[in-house]
Length: 418
Image 1 (tube, rainbow, N blue to C red):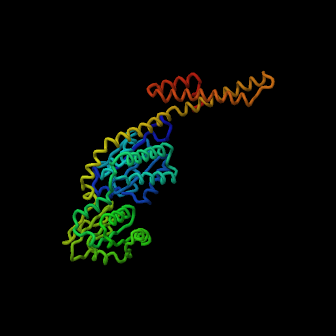
Image 2: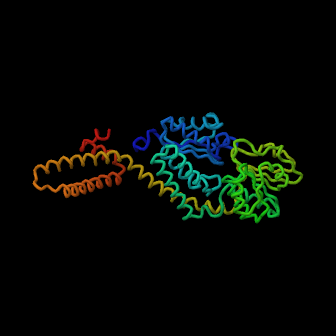
Image 3: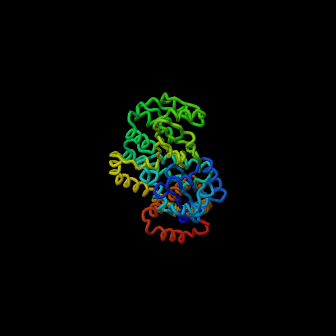
């Protein structure tokens, strides 16, 4: 990547792990909360990294960034999570340069999601870029790349049916309830945690179950009240959690904590209780499943649910890939222009120097020399010359390096580019 003059880092990498090889427990070890992301970005800046993005969702944790070696990014991840390098090496992936670019396109457009067509990751990429920009570690390359991925995502949503219907972990949980719980509209549902997944789950519950007996609990009560107000639902205090679990037929946990928030001791029920854990790391202790009347499912189990809608979405993958190839191709064309940007800049400076010297010479020789007209004419000529050079360099990528070398030699630009 150093030929493109976009970063001090030698190469662009994606390092990360996802649901494909890492189970929920391992993904939990490498999960990053908001504060950890901020600390990681600050350390990256202190270490001289000038372009880096960090995303951490229930399905994956990834770092996109410039570095001399991928271990610089792996080290950052391990230092700000509970994961170790040894664990990372067993389940992780590392992509470099163009492959790293392609990977972001597939992730951001939902083709690499645990549930095909789940586009929630694109908002995570937007947030990741905003966060990096705030910490001054987002360069022009990352901005252009994220915008290109957003463009591809929008086109796929608008031009294909790959996102038909609700396609997310939150919808998968509601779909499971609909398929496995009788008379769901009459059941007591308790939703613990009203972050993004919790909000989406709540919306899907109201929309698909026709159930008005949904209770929300969140550590910060006002967040739950905002969502409850939208759907006229009940909100209870965090202190009432154990009492509300006793009343519940279905408990959905989406708290996003780093340690379990629901333990065996919290649950005492004489009737059947379905517990769905939508969190990474797991927020429901495994031993909850030992309780006689409790059925516990984690999001990895929910995400394996397939239906006719999902099968239909798969038909549109080739169409989505064509769109990605087109937008990614345009991005790579822009990237190629970065190769000759310094030469074009130096050439423009050289031509202006030549122009100034010539106008100064003619000014002394010609009486009533018209400076204004001479400037206009000569600047237009320079502009036309620059356009011809730029179009030539864009148009024939196979000979770009040779053309750059010739331009530098003919116009003696080496010194200007240093």
